[in-house]
Image (cartoon, rainbow, N blue to C red; front, top):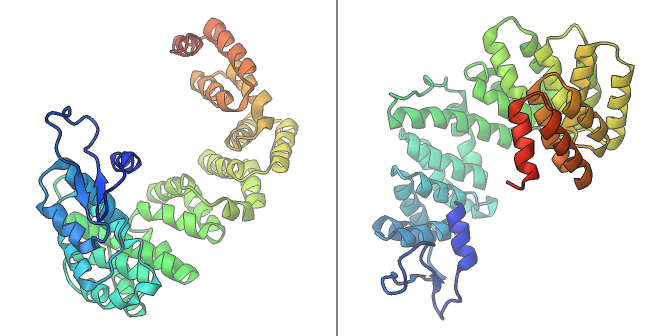
Length: 374
């Protein structure tokens, strides 16, 4: 949607009664330039959706989607027109409709009956549309229908030969579980944990939303001999967890990192998450732990945690890795992080050293290119 943002920033002052959006960049010169797109400032979401379907010019379609994404539905007829657009095979139009639906809130409860009715239909596209709207307005009558959708066993994960209907049904099941978890919080945890057995994709929202409660189960998966459980664990370890939730488990994460009886993957996942939530004082503690450890694997894991913290205290250790790590990828990674953390003069000094002394030809070449300003 970046082109739409560019259009918005470039918009000219509008004459009275209309918003004028210029033609997209790269349009023909002034002699052949199409007329500017005029959109009434009072155009409803339904009018915008209908006009988009009828529009032919690319710049007009882009302008209409931009406005639709920023316009909230007010009446049931708006929803009907938006649903008509959403049901078509047009990914950009669907994104605009979804952004419009996200603008709804419980104050728009008058629209709730439309969403509840659509949720009870068998068309996955209609149900996806309704699910987003029902969640936005928090329609209590839609909650039992949503739970039923979330509890329904997922169909086979779609592949290259799957129909659009099959793909939509799969996506609907995933979205229903996620919406229920966001809506009901801890009450939905057992269901989300169960559904993660059906697809590893749900391990990520499980970790993001329930991290402190979920961590023991994640460690169990990560230590399992079952490849499917380890796949779920891998997705969960790589999820982006809110820092405040990670900090609640920092002592346990540190314990896992230091536990030499755990699998390397488990310890590495814990190390990264521990580093991501580490305060300056915590980073100092990790540096002390590394200094005290005599185990090479543990020292490497603690270094990974320290690097993940992006704390300035990591600079000396990063420099040590950039010059002396045995793995060329590790040396390149340390140098890349030093570009952000080290003073410019220090970074250029390291670039010169790398360009002259790094054993890896690719690392030397990249450092030389940066020194040359390329």
